[in-house]
Image (cartoon, rainbow, N blue to C red; front, side):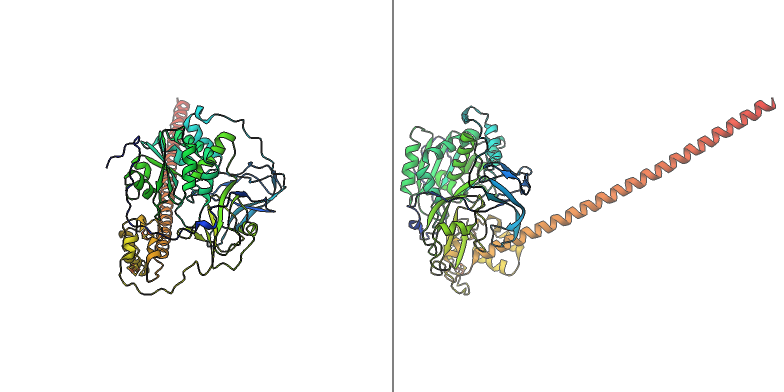
Length: 505
Ligand code: SF4
Ligand code: SF4
Protein backbone atom coordinates (compact mmCIF):
# COMPACT_ATOMS: atom_id res chain seq x y z
CA UNK A 1 0.00 0.00 0.00
CA UNK A 2 1.42 3.39 -0.93
CA UNK A 3 0.33 6.54 0.79
CA UNK A 4 1.28 9.84 -0.83
CA UNK A 5 1.55 12.59 1.72
CA UNK A 6 -0.09 15.10 -0.58
CA UNK A 7 -3.05 12.99 -1.65
CA UNK A 8 -6.63 13.91 -0.79
CA UNK A 9 -8.24 11.25 1.33
CA UNK A 10 -11.12 9.85 -0.67
CA UNK A 11 -11.61 6.57 1.14
CA UNK A 12 -10.92 5.20 4.56
CA UNK A 13 -9.37 1.87 5.42
CA UNK A 14 -11.19 -0.58 7.62
CA UNK A 15 -9.44 -1.69 10.77
CA UNK A 16 -10.02 -5.08 12.30
CA UNK A 17 -12.16 -5.55 15.38
CA UNK A 18 -13.51 -2.75 17.51
CA UNK A 19 -16.87 -2.28 19.20
CA UNK A 20 -19.74 0.18 19.26
CA UNK A 21 -20.44 1.16 22.87
CA UNK A 22 -23.27 3.62 23.49
CA UNK A 23 -21.44 6.95 23.37
CA UNK A 24 -23.40 8.69 26.19
CA UNK A 25 -22.03 12.03 24.97
CA UNK A 26 -25.35 13.87 24.99
CA UNK A 27 -24.97 14.37 28.76
CA UNK A 28 -22.31 17.02 28.21
CA UNK A 29 -21.81 17.59 24.46
CA UNK A 30 -23.88 20.76 24.41
CA UNK A 31 -22.35 22.27 27.52
CA UNK A 32 -19.98 25.08 26.56
CA UNK A 33 -16.61 25.18 28.33
CA UNK A 34 -16.83 27.06 31.63
CA UNK A 35 -13.99 28.22 33.87
CA UNK A 36 -14.04 26.58 37.28
CA UNK A 37 -13.52 29.31 39.92
CA UNK A 38 -10.12 29.25 41.65
CA UNK A 39 -10.33 26.70 44.48
CA UNK A 40 -9.11 27.40 48.03
CA UNK A 41 -6.18 25.00 47.74
CA UNK A 42 -4.29 23.33 44.89
CA UNK A 43 -2.34 20.08 45.22
CA UNK A 44 0.10 19.94 42.31
CA UNK A 45 1.85 16.57 41.83
CA UNK A 46 5.41 16.70 40.51
CA UNK A 47 4.79 13.73 38.23
CA UNK A 48 2.01 14.47 35.75
CA UNK A 49 3.76 12.99 32.76
CA UNK A 50 5.58 9.91 31.51
CA UNK A 51 9.25 10.04 32.56
CA UNK A 52 11.15 11.46 35.50
CA UNK A 53 9.31 13.49 38.14
CA UNK A 54 10.05 17.21 38.24
CA UNK A 55 12.23 18.59 41.05
CA UNK A 56 10.89 21.40 43.29
CA UNK A 57 12.22 24.88 42.54
CA UNK A 58 10.28 26.53 45.38
CA UNK A 59 10.03 26.04 49.11
CA UNK A 60 7.31 26.36 51.72
CA UNK A 61 6.38 29.98 52.31
CA UNK A 62 7.37 31.24 48.85
CA UNK A 63 4.94 33.54 47.09
CA UNK A 64 4.53 32.63 43.41
CA UNK A 65 2.85 34.18 40.42
CA UNK A 66 0.66 32.33 37.93
CA UNK A 67 2.87 30.54 35.41
CA UNK A 68 5.97 30.69 37.62
CA UNK A 69 8.14 27.58 37.60
CA UNK A 70 7.36 25.35 40.58
CA UNK A 71 9.44 22.34 39.62
CA UNK A 72 12.13 21.69 37.02
CA UNK A 73 12.05 18.82 34.56
CA UNK A 74 14.67 16.12 35.08
CA UNK A 75 16.43 14.46 32.17
CA UNK A 76 15.38 13.89 28.57
CA UNK A 77 11.85 12.60 29.25
CA UNK A 78 10.23 14.83 31.82
CA UNK A 79 8.22 18.05 32.05
CA UNK A 80 8.38 21.08 34.32
CA UNK A 81 5.45 22.13 36.51
CA UNK A 82 4.19 25.72 36.81
CA UNK A 83 2.01 27.56 39.30
CA UNK A 84 -1.64 27.34 38.13
CA UNK A 85 -2.41 30.66 39.84
CA UNK A 86 -0.74 33.20 42.11
CA UNK A 87 -0.49 32.44 45.82
CA UNK A 88 1.67 31.03 48.59
CA UNK A 89 3.37 27.64 48.67
CA UNK A 90 2.07 26.07 51.87
CA UNK A 91 3.61 22.67 51.45
CA UNK A 92 6.24 20.71 49.55
CA UNK A 93 5.46 17.20 50.64
CA UNK A 94 3.16 14.31 49.82
CA UNK A 95 -0.50 14.02 48.83
CA UNK A 96 -2.72 11.18 47.43
CA UNK A 97 -2.03 10.56 43.75
CA UNK A 98 -4.45 10.80 40.83
CA UNK A 99 -4.28 7.02 40.61
CA UNK A 100 -6.31 3.98 41.68
CA UNK A 101 -3.80 3.22 44.43
CA UNK A 102 -4.32 6.63 46.05
CA UNK A 103 -0.70 6.34 47.27
CA UNK A 104 0.94 9.56 48.32
CA UNK A 105 3.21 11.23 45.79
CA UNK A 106 5.52 14.22 45.87
CA UNK A 107 3.22 17.26 45.66
CA UNK A 108 3.41 21.04 46.02
CA UNK A 109 0.43 22.58 47.80
CA UNK A 110 -0.48 26.13 46.84
CA UNK A 111 -2.87 28.46 48.59
CA UNK A 112 -4.23 30.83 45.92
CA UNK A 113 -4.32 34.55 46.77
CA UNK A 114 -7.34 35.08 44.51
CA UNK A 115 -5.53 37.63 42.31
CA UNK A 116 -4.64 35.15 39.56
CA UNK A 117 -1.67 37.36 38.70
CA UNK A 118 0.51 36.16 35.82
CA UNK A 119 4.30 36.31 35.72
CA UNK A 120 5.61 38.72 33.11
CA UNK A 121 4.92 36.94 29.84
CA UNK A 122 7.27 37.31 26.86
CA UNK A 123 6.14 39.73 24.12
CA UNK A 124 4.11 38.01 21.35
CA UNK A 125 6.31 36.55 18.62
CA UNK A 126 5.64 34.91 15.26
CA UNK A 127 6.43 31.19 15.78
CA UNK A 128 6.97 30.73 12.04
CA UNK A 129 10.08 32.95 12.21
CA UNK A 130 11.65 30.69 14.86
CA UNK A 131 13.97 27.78 14.26
CA UNK A 132 11.85 24.56 14.49
CA UNK A 133 14.12 23.30 17.29
CA UNK A 134 13.31 26.46 19.25
CA UNK A 135 9.59 25.59 19.07
CA UNK A 136 10.26 22.22 20.71
CA UNK A 137 12.41 23.98 23.33
CA UNK A 138 9.57 26.40 24.18
CA UNK A 139 7.01 23.58 24.26
CA UNK A 140 9.28 21.70 26.68
CA UNK A 141 9.70 24.79 28.87
CA UNK A 142 5.89 25.23 28.94
CA UNK A 143 5.49 21.73 30.44
CA UNK A 144 3.17 20.53 27.66
CA UNK A 145 2.41 16.81 27.54
CA UNK A 146 0.04 14.70 25.43
CA UNK A 147 -3.33 15.85 26.71
CA UNK A 148 -5.37 13.01 25.24
CA UNK A 149 -4.29 11.02 28.28
CA UNK A 150 -0.91 9.71 27.10
CA UNK A 151 1.03 12.47 28.97
CA UNK A 152 4.17 11.89 26.92
CA UNK A 153 6.19 15.14 26.89
CA UNK A 154 5.14 16.81 23.61
CA UNK A 155 8.55 18.37 22.90
CA UNK A 156 10.09 14.90 22.58
CA UNK A 157 7.55 14.11 19.84
CA UNK A 158 8.17 17.45 18.11
CA UNK A 159 11.88 16.63 17.96
CA UNK A 160 11.24 13.39 16.06
CA UNK A 161 12.16 15.18 12.82
CA UNK A 162 15.79 14.66 13.84
CA UNK A 163 15.46 10.87 13.79
CA UNK A 164 12.69 10.02 11.34
CA UNK A 165 11.70 10.92 7.80
CA UNK A 166 8.36 12.52 8.59
CA UNK A 167 5.70 13.51 6.07
CA UNK A 168 2.37 13.85 7.89
CA UNK A 169 0.90 15.22 11.11
CA UNK A 170 -2.32 13.49 12.14
CA UNK A 171 -4.57 15.20 14.68
CA UNK A 172 -6.50 12.73 16.78
CA UNK A 173 -9.93 14.29 17.19
CA UNK A 174 -11.65 10.91 17.34
CA UNK A 175 -12.52 11.14 21.05
CA UNK A 176 -13.96 7.64 20.74
CA UNK A 177 -14.35 6.98 24.48
CA UNK A 178 -17.98 7.22 25.64
CA UNK A 179 -18.99 10.26 27.74
CA UNK A 180 -15.94 12.40 26.88
CA UNK A 181 -16.71 15.66 25.07
CA UNK A 182 -13.83 18.00 26.02
CA UNK A 183 -12.00 17.67 22.67
CA UNK A 184 -15.30 18.11 20.85
CA UNK A 185 -15.92 21.39 22.72
CA UNK A 186 -12.34 22.58 22.25
CA UNK A 187 -12.59 22.02 18.48
CA UNK A 188 -15.97 23.76 18.35
CA UNK A 189 -15.09 26.74 20.55
CA UNK A 190 -11.40 27.30 19.79
CA UNK A 191 -11.13 25.99 16.24
CA UNK A 192 -8.99 28.90 14.94
CA UNK A 193 -6.51 28.59 17.81
CA UNK A 194 -6.41 24.80 17.49
CA UNK A 195 -5.63 25.12 13.77
CA UNK A 196 -2.93 27.68 14.61
CA UNK A 197 -1.39 25.27 17.13
CA UNK A 198 -1.57 22.42 14.61
CA UNK A 199 0.26 24.54 11.98
CA UNK A 200 2.93 25.46 14.54
CA UNK A 201 3.44 21.76 15.35
CA UNK A 202 3.61 20.84 11.66
CA UNK A 203 6.22 23.60 11.14
CA UNK A 204 8.25 22.24 14.09
CA UNK A 205 8.04 18.73 12.64
CA UNK A 206 8.94 19.91 9.14
CA UNK A 207 5.81 18.36 7.56
CA UNK A 208 3.35 19.96 5.14
CA UNK A 209 0.60 17.39 5.16
CA UNK A 210 -1.94 17.61 7.99
CA UNK A 211 -4.93 15.31 8.50
CA UNK A 212 -7.46 15.96 11.25
CA UNK A 213 -9.59 12.90 12.01
CA UNK A 214 -12.88 13.50 13.83
CA UNK A 215 -15.53 10.85 14.50
CA UNK A 216 -18.84 11.41 12.73
CA UNK A 217 -20.72 11.88 16.01
CA UNK A 218 -19.14 15.37 16.21
CA UNK A 219 -20.49 17.14 13.11
CA UNK A 220 -20.21 20.60 14.69
CA UNK A 221 -16.55 20.07 15.53
CA UNK A 222 -15.94 18.83 11.97
CA UNK A 223 -17.65 21.92 10.54
CA UNK A 224 -15.84 24.36 12.84
CA UNK A 225 -12.44 22.83 12.09
CA UNK A 226 -13.14 22.78 8.34
CA UNK A 227 -14.06 26.43 8.40
CA UNK A 228 -11.00 27.38 10.45
CA UNK A 229 -8.79 25.44 8.02
CA UNK A 230 -10.29 26.93 4.83
CA UNK A 231 -7.24 29.07 4.12
CA UNK A 232 -4.85 26.12 4.40
CA UNK A 233 -5.09 23.61 1.54
CA UNK A 234 -2.55 21.33 3.23
CA UNK A 235 -5.05 20.60 6.03
CA UNK A 236 -7.75 17.97 5.54
CA UNK A 237 -10.54 17.40 8.03
CA UNK A 238 -11.75 13.83 7.67
CA UNK A 239 -14.88 12.29 9.21
CA UNK A 240 -14.24 8.95 10.89
CA UNK A 241 -16.68 6.07 11.43
CA UNK A 242 -17.79 5.69 15.03
CA UNK A 243 -15.97 2.62 16.08
CA UNK A 244 -14.08 2.18 19.32
CA UNK A 245 -10.99 2.33 19.62
CA UNK A 246 -10.70 4.70 16.67
CA UNK A 247 -8.65 7.03 18.89
CA UNK A 248 -5.84 4.49 19.24
CA UNK A 249 -2.96 6.18 17.38
CA UNK A 250 -1.99 3.22 15.23
CA UNK A 251 -5.58 2.39 14.30
CA UNK A 252 -6.38 6.00 13.50
CA UNK A 253 -3.35 6.26 11.21
CA UNK A 254 -4.29 3.01 9.50
CA UNK A 255 -7.88 4.12 8.99
CA UNK A 256 -6.77 7.39 7.42
CA UNK A 257 -3.78 6.26 5.38
CA UNK A 258 -3.88 2.48 5.13
CA UNK A 259 -0.35 2.43 6.58
CA UNK A 260 0.35 -0.13 9.29
CA UNK A 261 2.68 0.80 12.12
CA UNK A 262 5.19 -2.00 12.78
CA UNK A 263 4.53 -4.13 15.88
CA UNK A 264 5.88 -2.34 18.94
CA UNK A 265 7.05 0.47 16.67
CA UNK A 266 6.05 4.13 16.50
CA UNK A 267 3.87 5.83 13.90
CA UNK A 268 7.04 7.88 13.23
CA UNK A 269 8.49 4.67 11.72
CA UNK A 270 6.04 5.21 8.86
CA UNK A 271 6.58 8.98 8.75
CA UNK A 272 3.58 10.08 10.81
CA UNK A 273 3.30 11.91 14.13
CA UNK A 274 -0.01 12.04 15.99
CA UNK A 275 -1.08 14.80 18.38
CA UNK A 276 -4.29 15.71 20.14
CA UNK A 277 -6.39 18.92 19.60
CA UNK A 278 -6.02 19.97 23.27
CA UNK A 279 -2.25 19.61 22.94
CA UNK A 280 -2.35 21.78 19.80
CA UNK A 281 -4.23 24.47 21.74
CA UNK A 282 -1.66 24.35 24.55
CA UNK A 283 1.18 24.62 22.00
CA UNK A 284 -0.49 27.68 20.43
CA UNK A 285 -0.87 29.36 23.86
CA UNK A 286 2.76 28.63 24.73
CA UNK A 287 4.16 29.90 21.41
CA UNK A 288 1.88 32.87 20.78
CA UNK A 289 1.42 34.06 24.37
CA UNK A 290 4.30 32.45 26.26
CA UNK A 291 1.86 30.73 28.62
CA UNK A 292 2.89 27.46 30.26
CA UNK A 293 0.38 24.66 30.79
CA UNK A 294 -1.48 25.47 34.02
CA UNK A 295 -5.03 24.33 33.28
CA UNK A 296 -6.98 21.97 31.06
CA UNK A 297 -10.49 21.29 29.83
CA UNK A 298 -12.10 18.25 31.42
CA UNK A 299 -15.49 16.57 30.92
CA UNK A 300 -17.35 15.89 34.16
CA UNK A 301 -20.09 13.39 33.44
CA UNK A 302 -21.87 10.16 34.29
CA UNK A 303 -25.30 9.36 35.68
CA UNK A 304 -24.27 10.18 39.26
CA UNK A 305 -23.33 13.80 38.43
CA UNK A 306 -26.19 16.29 38.87
CA UNK A 307 -25.01 18.73 36.17
CA UNK A 308 -22.52 17.19 33.72
CA UNK A 309 -20.22 19.88 32.27
CA UNK A 310 -17.07 20.70 30.37
CA UNK A 311 -14.84 22.74 32.65
CA UNK A 312 -11.52 24.52 32.32
CA UNK A 313 -9.83 23.53 35.55
CA UNK A 314 -6.58 24.68 37.15
CA UNK A 315 -4.17 21.76 37.50
CA UNK A 316 -4.06 20.56 41.08
CA UNK A 317 -7.78 21.26 41.73
CA UNK A 318 -9.37 18.53 43.82
CA UNK A 319 -11.93 16.31 42.07
CA UNK A 320 -14.31 17.21 44.90
CA UNK A 321 -14.15 20.93 43.90
CA UNK A 322 -14.99 19.93 40.32
CA UNK A 323 -17.90 17.76 41.44
CA UNK A 324 -19.19 20.51 43.76
CA UNK A 325 -19.27 22.92 40.80
CA UNK A 326 -21.42 20.37 38.97
CA UNK A 327 -23.86 20.49 41.90
CA UNK A 328 -22.59 17.27 43.46
CA UNK A 329 -23.84 13.71 43.10
CA UNK A 330 -27.49 12.77 42.85
CA UNK A 331 -26.62 9.21 43.94
CA UNK A 332 -23.45 7.77 45.39
CA UNK A 333 -21.38 6.73 42.34
CA UNK A 334 -20.58 3.05 41.95
CA UNK A 335 -17.42 3.92 40.07
CA UNK A 336 -15.30 7.07 39.92
CA UNK A 337 -13.10 7.16 36.83
CA UNK A 338 -10.41 9.40 35.43
CA UNK A 339 -10.71 9.37 31.62
CA UNK A 340 -13.21 7.31 29.66
CA UNK A 341 -15.05 4.20 30.88
CA UNK A 342 -13.15 1.88 28.50
CA UNK A 343 -9.54 2.85 29.14
CA UNK A 344 -9.76 5.20 32.11
CA UNK A 345 -8.40 4.54 35.58
CA UNK A 346 -10.38 4.13 38.75
CA UNK A 347 -9.97 6.92 41.27
CA UNK A 348 -9.88 6.07 44.98
CA UNK A 349 -11.93 9.11 46.06
CA UNK A 350 -12.63 12.77 45.31
CA UNK A 351 -9.67 14.13 47.30
CA UNK A 352 -7.23 13.48 44.46
CA UNK A 353 -6.12 16.41 42.27
CA UNK A 354 -6.71 17.02 38.55
CA UNK A 355 -3.59 16.45 36.44
CA UNK A 356 -2.43 17.31 32.91
CA UNK A 357 -3.53 14.00 31.37
CA UNK A 358 -7.04 13.88 32.85
CA UNK A 359 -9.62 14.52 30.14
CA UNK A 360 -12.63 13.25 32.07
CA UNK A 361 -14.02 12.68 35.54
CA UNK A 362 -16.84 10.16 35.35
CA UNK A 363 -19.08 9.24 38.26
CA UNK A 364 -21.04 6.21 37.09
CA UNK A 365 -24.10 4.67 38.69
CA UNK A 366 -24.64 0.94 39.25
CA UNK A 367 -26.91 0.94 36.20
CA UNK A 368 -24.13 2.30 33.99
CA UNK A 369 -21.57 -0.14 35.30
CA UNK A 370 -22.30 -3.74 34.45
CA UNK A 371 -21.03 -5.69 37.40
CA UNK A 372 -22.25 -9.09 36.28
CA UNK A 373 -20.92 -12.23 37.83
CA UNK A 374 -18.02 -13.75 35.89
CA UNK A 375 -18.78 -17.21 34.47
CA UNK A 376 -16.60 -19.77 32.61
CA UNK A 377 -15.49 -19.02 29.05
CA UNK A 378 -17.86 -20.52 26.47
CA UNK A 379 -15.24 -20.20 23.70
CA UNK A 380 -17.53 -18.09 21.55
CA UNK A 381 -14.52 -16.15 20.12
CA UNK A 382 -16.35 -12.81 20.37
CA UNK A 383 -13.25 -11.38 22.09
CA UNK A 384 -11.07 -12.49 19.17
CA UNK A 385 -13.37 -10.79 16.70
CA UNK A 386 -13.46 -7.60 18.76
CA UNK A 387 -9.72 -7.29 19.29
CA UNK A 388 -8.36 -4.51 17.05
CA UNK A 389 -4.83 -5.86 17.47
CA UNK A 390 -5.55 -9.35 16.14
CA UNK A 391 -4.80 -11.04 19.48
CA UNK A 392 -6.33 -14.09 21.17
CA UNK A 393 -7.70 -12.58 24.40
CA UNK A 394 -9.19 -15.87 25.65
CA UNK A 395 -5.84 -17.69 25.40
CA UNK A 396 -3.96 -14.74 26.86
CA UNK A 397 -6.34 -14.51 29.82
CA UNK A 398 -6.15 -18.27 30.50
CA UNK A 399 -2.34 -18.07 30.64
CA UNK A 400 -2.34 -14.86 32.66
CA UNK A 401 -4.69 -16.49 35.16
CA UNK A 402 -2.33 -19.48 35.42
CA UNK A 403 0.59 -17.07 36.02
CA UNK A 404 2.26 -18.19 32.81
CA UNK A 405 3.71 -14.83 31.87
CA UNK A 406 6.10 -16.18 29.22
CA UNK A 407 3.17 -17.71 27.32
CA UNK A 408 1.09 -14.50 27.56
CA UNK A 409 4.06 -12.53 26.28
CA UNK A 410 4.46 -14.93 23.36
CA UNK A 411 0.77 -14.48 22.58
CA UNK A 412 1.38 -10.74 22.13
CA UNK A 413 0.70 -9.18 25.53
CA UNK A 414 2.89 -6.20 24.68
CA UNK A 415 0.84 -5.53 21.53
CA UNK A 416 -2.34 -5.24 23.61
CA UNK A 417 -3.40 -1.58 23.81
CA UNK A 418 -5.65 -2.29 26.82
CA UNK A 419 -8.65 -0.94 24.92
CA UNK A 420 -11.07 -3.25 26.75
CA UNK A 421 -13.02 -4.20 23.59
CA UNK A 422 -12.63 -7.89 24.47
CA UNK A 423 -14.02 -7.42 27.98
CA UNK A 424 -16.85 -5.30 26.58
CA UNK A 425 -18.15 -8.07 24.32
CA UNK A 426 -17.47 -11.07 26.54
CA UNK A 427 -20.81 -12.77 27.33
CA UNK A 428 -19.19 -14.54 30.27
CA UNK A 429 -18.26 -11.12 31.75
CA UNK A 430 -14.62 -12.13 32.13
CA UNK A 431 -12.61 -9.01 32.97
CA UNK A 432 -10.08 -9.87 30.27
CA UNK A 433 -8.36 -6.49 30.11
CA UNK A 434 -7.82 -6.55 33.86
CA UNK A 435 -5.88 -9.81 33.47
CA UNK A 436 -3.73 -8.16 30.79
CA UNK A 437 -3.10 -5.04 32.84
CA UNK A 438 -2.17 -7.24 35.78
CA UNK A 439 0.16 -9.35 33.60
CA UNK A 440 1.80 -6.19 32.21
CA UNK A 441 2.31 -4.93 35.77
CA UNK A 442 3.86 -8.27 36.77
CA UNK A 443 6.15 -8.23 33.74
CA UNK A 444 7.21 -4.67 34.49
CA UNK A 445 7.99 -5.54 38.11
CA UNK A 446 9.93 -8.62 36.95
CA UNK A 447 11.89 -6.44 34.57
CA UNK A 448 12.52 -3.92 37.33
CA UNK A 449 13.69 -6.74 39.64
CA UNK A 450 15.96 -8.10 36.89
CA UNK A 451 17.29 -4.63 36.20
CA UNK A 452 17.99 -4.21 39.92
CA UNK A 453 19.72 -7.61 40.03
CA UNK A 454 21.82 -6.75 36.96
CA UNK A 455 22.65 -3.39 38.46
CA UNK A 456 23.70 -5.00 41.78
CA UNK A 457 25.82 -7.52 39.86
CA UNK A 458 27.40 -4.70 37.86
CA UNK A 459 28.16 -2.72 41.03
CA UNK A 460 29.70 -5.78 42.73
CA UNK A 461 31.84 -6.45 39.65
CA UNK A 462 32.90 -2.81 39.57
CA UNK A 463 33.76 -2.93 43.27
CA UNK A 464 35.78 -6.15 42.82
CA UNK A 465 37.64 -4.62 39.89
CA UNK A 466 38.30 -1.48 41.91
CA UNK A 467 39.60 -3.50 44.86
CA UNK A 468 41.79 -5.66 42.60
CA UNK A 469 43.18 -2.50 41.00
CA UNK A 470 43.87 -1.02 44.44
CA UNK A 471 45.58 -4.26 45.48
CA UNK A 472 47.70 -4.21 42.33
CA UNK A 473 48.61 -0.58 42.86
CA UNK A 474 49.54 -1.29 46.50
CA UNK A 475 51.69 -4.24 45.48
CA UNK A 476 53.39 -2.21 42.77
CA UNK A 477 54.02 0.63 45.21
CA UNK A 478 55.56 -1.76 47.78
CA UNK A 479 57.77 -3.33 45.14
CA UNK A 480 58.80 0.13 43.94
CA UNK A 481 59.60 1.17 47.50
CA UNK A 482 61.57 -2.04 47.98
CA UNK A 483 63.49 -1.34 44.79
CA UNK A 484 64.10 2.27 45.85
CA UNK A 485 65.24 1.18 49.34
CA UNK A 486 67.58 -1.41 47.82
CA UNK A 487 68.92 1.19 45.38
CA UNK A 488 69.40 3.65 48.26
CA UNK A 489 71.15 0.98 50.33
CA UNK A 490 73.42 0.07 47.41
CA UNK A 491 74.17 3.76 46.78
CA UNK A 492 74.97 4.28 50.50
CA UNK A 493 77.20 1.20 50.52
CA UNK A 494 78.97 2.40 47.38
CA UNK A 495 79.41 5.88 48.91
CA UNK A 496 80.76 4.35 52.15
CA UNK A 497 83.13 2.13 50.22
CA UNK A 498 84.32 5.12 48.24
CA UNK A 499 84.85 7.18 51.42
CA UNK A 500 86.78 4.27 53.02
CA UNK A 501 88.88 3.92 49.91
CA UNK A 502 89.64 7.64 49.86
CA UNK A 503 90.50 7.58 53.59
CA UNK A 504 92.91 4.65 53.21
CA UNK A 505 94.56 6.38 50.25
S1 SF4 B 1 -15.64 -13.59 24.60
FE1 SF4 B 1 -15.50 -14.39 26.67
S2 SF4 B 1 -16.63 -16.28 26.59
FE2 SF4 B 1 -16.26 -15.72 24.47
S3 SF4 B 1 -14.31 -16.75 23.97
FE3 SF4 B 1 -13.78 -14.76 24.69
S4 SF4 B 1 -13.34 -15.04 26.86
FE4 SF4 B 1 -14.53 -16.81 26.19
S1 SF4 C 1 -7.69 -5.11 25.54
FE1 SF4 C 1 -6.00 -5.98 24.39
S2 SF4 C 1 -6.65 -8.06 23.93
FE2 SF4 C 1 -8.49 -6.93 24.54
S3 SF4 C 1 -9.35 -6.21 22.63
FE3 SF4 C 1 -8.03 -4.57 23.39
S4 SF4 C 1 -6.05 -4.95 22.43
FE4 SF4 C 1 -7.24 -6.82 22.20
